[in-house]
Image (tube, rainbow, N blue to C red):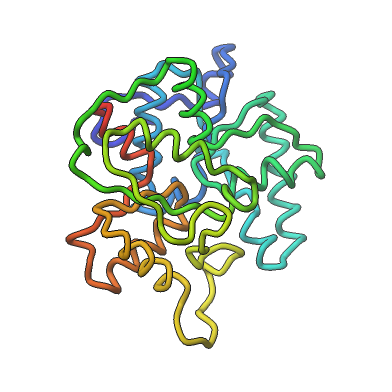
Length: 266
């Protein structure tokens, strides 16, 4: 399949397998990357970067299904196991060993919960992947496109507190020329965006203030020009927060992937 408005060809696992080719990485697009209009842009930007860096990868295309994370978080264990076991069979068919994810929820469930059902893989969130490439000298971000911008980063719960990954996203952001500023609650003390644990799919409970509003207020306090995220759930909630505060024309919410792609001129 072709990425819209680009000239890159996105390799599909079944097509490569038919030619006897086994890519090094499976790029797990995720539900948001496949269906959410805003996050589709992030998935396409990641594919552009992978192609630009000549990474050996492929996607599952129509064979990819939900990991089952929302089902398990919502308490439907049977549905989760059905989805997980089905995915494990597909991954086994292609002898997948390494999985690249752009969603921390996919990252967490593949890394920590699929092994209980026999699905054992090397799972890498894209910020960790970029960090590795930077350390190896394979990814150089030399750009002044954001040099006059102030960026704050929101830690996704499923990358940070769930998996103790705080360094990788910041290391990648530090490669982008700009001023960085932390919110008052960050890293292990960061406030959730309000969407995790299947909260994205239910109505708000009674209370004085919704979590996403509390979090966007902390982001606005930094006076940042850009709120950087690394999770589709966080992107949705913080973008909604900017709209709620009527700040969407002044302050922008970009995924780190988009910042890297822009810095690389892709």
